[in-house]
Each structure stands twice: as C-alpha cells, then as structure tokens.
Length: 329
View (cartoon, rainbow, N blue to C red):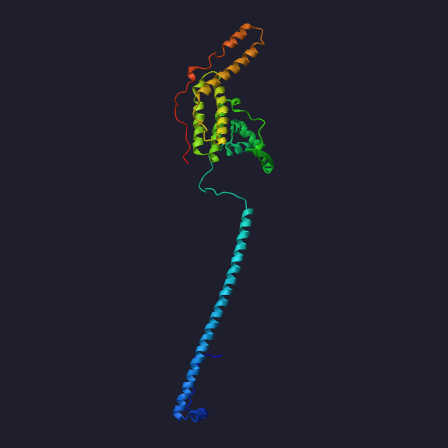
C-alpha cells in the first residue's frame, strides 16, 4: 500500500471522467460544474480518511518495530551481561589459583640487618599473645629453627588445644623444641639478645604499642635493676622475668581487665626471689661441701655465700634513662 498523502486529486473535468460526471448529474440533479465540485469533495473526504488510516498504520508499525528493537536490544544486553558474568567468574577462579603475594616498594632498598627468625612454634605463640620462653628468640633458638626448617613439612598438620578446643594446625606451629630452656637457665647476655629479637617480632605481628612499650620498659628496668650488682643478681633477675612474664600472659588471657603493668618492678617479689635463689644455691653448696672430710674447706665455702640476701641495696632506684618507645597507634 502506497502513501495516500502522495496522491493527487483526479481532474473530473477531463473526458475520461465524463461518465462519472453524468452519473452524478442524473442522480443528484446537478449541473456539470456542481457535479465536478461534488466529485472533488467526495475524493477529498475519502483521501483524508485514507491518509489518517495510513498514518495510524505507520504509527502502529513504528511502535511494533520499536518494541521489536527494544526486545532485541534487551536480549543482546542480557547475552552480554551473562557473558560478562561468566567472564568475571572465570577471572575470579583464575585469580584464586594465582599465588597470593603483596606489593613492594620499588624505591626501598633491603634492610642492613636481618633479624634471625625464631621457629614457627614461637611465632604462633606470640601471634596468639601467649607466653613463650625467651630461648626461642635467642641465637641458639633461631639457629635451631633455621636448621630444622623444611618447606615440605609445612603442610603436615597436628592437633592443638586452645581454650579446651582441639584445632588442626601445621606441625611446625605446635612442636616444642626439646632443646628449649626456661628463662632462668639462660645467661643474662643470651636473655638480652633474645629480648631484642622478641620485641622486633611482636612489633612485626602488630601487637598494640601499649603492650610493646610496656615490655620494652620492663626489659630495660630489669637490665638496670640494682639487684644485678649483688651476688647471683643475674640469676635473680632471670627468675623474676620468667615468673612475671608468665603471670602477665595468664592475666591477659583471662581477660578480667586486671592485668598488671609489667614494666613496674615489684620489689617485694624481687627481694623474695633474692632470698629464694641464694637459699637454694647455699643449700646446694652445703650439700656438696658436706661430702668433703675437711671442716676448714666447708667453713670457707659457707662463709663465701651472702648471709643476708635482703640487702637494702636491692631497693628500686630511678632509671638512668627511659627505654626506646615504639610509635603510637
């Protein structure tokens, strides 16, 4: 069907249209000119009707075409969306299979000093904020950790009990070293070397600055305590460190809100340990001397032991200078 708006009204005065004019004249009693006018009016009315019908049909067709295009676009967009979802799923699956590795600073050179790494067992302990012997952070402990490290054993699992709950953890993280020694069996030099490594690693695993600073101050106060200038002073200080650190971690673990400030040296406990350590050593010496037949030798050795361990010099004194503190969080 062609567009009726393009049609031109016929010439009803022409010879080919004479029969039509005569029919109008006979039917309506019109003269020739009136018949031509009537024919023009009839054509115009029919033409206008057909133009309106054409426009409506074209509008409906246009709407139908637009709906079809919209549906086609929607189908295409849904297809693209599904392809993108599938592509993203595949990307995530591929990402999961990639080795996880953090970024690095392209302008940062390597450190000048590499702090020896303790065993995975020690790392696990401080990560869980639990007590662990300082030996693990000493040169001997770190050397053993380096010798025993086996990458193929990293996947082996063992049982670990935490708050009465059994969990599976890598064997390296739950294996206690048979060579580990309590703090009081270290030399004071070993203890000081170990505390440097210990402070470094608890800082590395993001312990709160408050706790790190308290421990740093504790070690400094212990190192500079006047009790160390007395006979067996280093051993007394090591016994103090062993007991007070374990108690501190126990209090933190119980989470009662009453954990004490470990940096404060308790002089009563220190004096009690002075008496305990010296009494123990004195008893051992007397036991050994009693096996000798010479009374003179026994007397001389006994007199070599301090008789009054609660020396007034063991009272606390002001620190010589404050220990280094870590940055605030």
